[in-house]
Length: 328
Image (cartoon, rainbow, N blue to C red; front, side, top):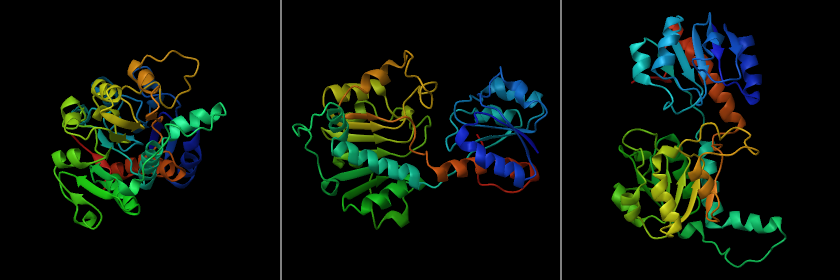
């Protein structure tokens, strides 16, 4: 099978080389994004694989169909960069990736502890040899009520990790998970918002979850609530969140994702002017931690994402069942 692999990063090459040697596949590696301008790189291929910066919209998918390409994979869990309805209309089957939930769960716990113990301003002070303690008093995680919104594989891993700290855990999910009942109490979203000191979000970006954190939902939360987002930036109404920081309704905010992060995160922009004004403004606050969409970024995750991205294409072509196929 001939596959054009776009957005290839250096940390993927070793595993891609291994797959090329061990599987019945020819991989054409392309560093750039898949777009109308780079379609020629997929000439003669039966499938394409991308990461999240490539926008597989109706125009691109129609062009891929015209080239005879019938399979596409994204080496990411999220598929919000792919027009799944257009893919179906064009007869292109789509798959996504999976990786162990521990990477994002561990990162989520790290962010919670960082903001609870005020590590960002402490780190700033160390850079100028200021070792004072004023304003750095933290809180113990054990004494907090933590609300987990979304109990899929990552949310469930977060809950199991939190249980070791002895804190009270509330959980919300459309379908309650019996296996998590020993660790968390399932409640409705209003109760979770009202009673949680810390709220961490682990739901996909969908029309139903888009900007679920807004002025109205913030009004139902505790004053000084801590918000953690390692899922998708689109979950946050950033104007409302910024206002919440400014008014101290939000005690601390930690986000590994940001709406309109494309072209900024995962790139070296240190000598450039960043046009995402919300991101630039928010990161100044001592109680706001922004990381560059790296919660997933472990050796184990990268290997899994690459394997899923290639093997799922082979499975679809061969007619083998794959749980990784997604559809509109």
